[in-house]
Image 1 (tube, rainbow over the protein chains, first blue to last red):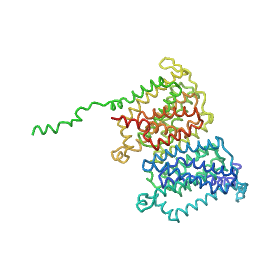
Image 2: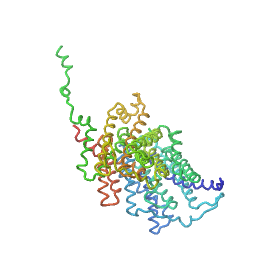
Image 3: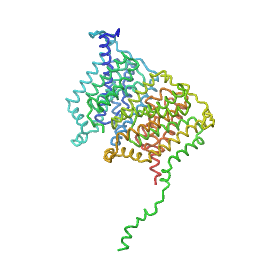
Image 4: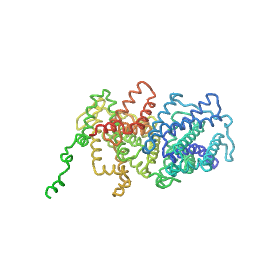
Length: 294
Length: 332
């Protein structure tokens, strides 16, 4: 195996972590929304795509990447709040399939609206100047922007962890995920909590879309592919588990990255093979509670 | 004493004469009725190619409805079953040089096989997980067929499934003629109606609905819930594989998009639009969906916007679908 040095493998591992970071962010939003609202958000990919386009629009207006980092989650999250309030809320109590079907229809509408506004073809998304180039990370030169993606993901995860574990609102969210009935009895406005959780989940999806934009460009269909892959992440990690989403997201990123080094044509198939193995060995995923889905 | 006993034995006045109502009669002959509609459909539908498309997607939705409407599992991976049927049929004709009917046979086998593989993995999960796992596995099928360029043509699709003439029991039929083509397809769809109606009317059909209605009770009654689900999913694969094979013959090409997750979404929309868990719903849904798509795409390229919006309105306000809402009104 000439040319496959330890350094190359280590670099590819880091590239996998950067890719995995995007999966982690995407899957965490999905998991948060499911864990709390028991809604599988099929429009999550569309929110991700909208995040990238909002970023693009801000850049067109003359803003810079740092403005995007703040504005994109706010705009996309606000949009998510509106969607929850007016489209998903009427469906609570009508069976678990209905919100899923509704968000599926919504994703069609969102993708088509973006096509109308920005055209069918994609756009390149420039990496911010300060994050261009590569840095030596000990095993070789690694693109600075990918390092930034890993760092930004870590910051979001830390913030989310602090929010969920250390604030009283986070306590309500965690309690609501366990037993919304009891939380409601205790006098908490659960509907409002759900609204905010949906907003946070979609905000993180938009943020993930923005981070992914400089890596792969921006096209209206960018959300569809990652949605299927994020489902793999949630199945592998265990639905509704944040820790599971983080571990499985990074694992999936590394698996894709490694197979594209050794057998590029199998890169896409490999993650589904991973899911198949997990389903056979441990159907509830790494951190999923057995029987949660019944 | 005698008279009082007689009173007890006497049936209640309402139940005394219970002639079979027209509704029950229609239900009993649902397959024949559906076949009749299919046979006269070209007379009211001027675009025969579209009519054939409606038949094929209706059959696809019929197979999907078996899993979603009757078994109660939402699958988002039915594109894989439909697409495998189409590819198997195409490969049989283009690469193996087999006759058209062998192509259809292999298409059904392909649908059954793919359903067995996806089913074995996805049945291990329950509830909402099922939608996600089936979608992911069908995406995997997409990549597998995409990479197998020698067999499937990869990105360009499988071309050259040219059937000009077919012979049935010595009778030569011109498959280029749209109307002949429609009736050849209709023959298979009608056969599928009768098979499906028989399955649903059988004791096994009752078990399928029992599992949907109450899993715990079905299990307590001694039925193997997991096996019932798997068998139903595989049966559904057979219907969808047949639909895929007919689609390959109808289009003379199998585009790779047939395996895309949009195809899975379309069949979900069709079933919901028509009315899930009803016998006629899928066909009516296919007619409504494809006509809507046809009409909208003549005046805007953004037909997905309209289709998505119509679907959302259906989910919000008409979850029973066209036929489901209608049947509630007319049911005596």
